[in-house]
Length: 320
Ligand code: FES
View 1 (tube, rainbow, N blue to C red):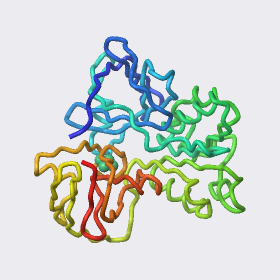
View 2 (view 1 turned 90 degrees about the vertical axis):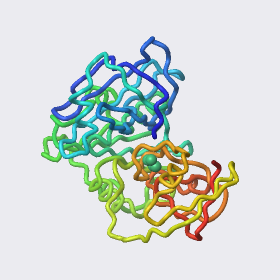
View 3 (view 1 turned 30 degrees about the horizontal axis):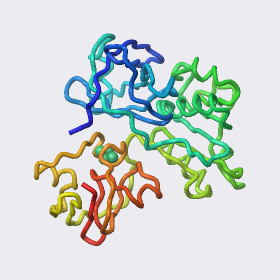
């Protein structure tokens, strides 16, 4: 089950590169849409029963924005969601979407924001850069693309001026941005925060180069869970629902979401991989073993992603 509390009309489709198209979504009756902050994403329900999570690729045009804009790369080897959007959704169509959620916000305490985008990972970072530009924030946006022809949102990037740096793999860029030179020692400048969004290899290379950055100053948005070579054992545990006064057994091969579903209790999900934040709830007791890739260390003190959390001590109590 997923959050689908809004219906929007596709008011414009714009091809940005051979693989990427931008979709503008508006209220069918022209009414304002729910507000969001830069870095937010929405669930989009697509023909064929697919639900995909896409970042909003522009800073909001007000507290109650008039439109959302997403940028979607067609993934021929993907699971079918992006192909359904590219091939089966036309201008004027209605789509069900969820309300915007933000698990990748700008850090209010940062004095400089270094935004690193790999490929279509540009979408949330473009919104953040536009917001910082509007607010007079100090930022640099580095964009890594295969070539100039593969660079999405080129006019929007040009509008941000010299604070955008472009790197193309085919070496046609005005500069080559070496990750190790950009992020590596000595220590980052005081108050600097780093934001990363891109494919797994790009994320890992960036994290390796930024290994010495202080904890809490590096913010990540994954498309898919990072590859891991470490095998973790899934043990059964008891999920206590504090609000209902009941306990649910979660078997080793089940997620908490599945166990609740078996009891007729539906938890909204989208990625089911700990990436999107749709299933996050507050926890109130026990000892969660977090396996998500969307919650910060601070958020984990009070929140869990139910699609992937386990319990270290065999018990987890949540506010449901
Ligand atoms: S459904 Fe995406 S994090 Fe759980």
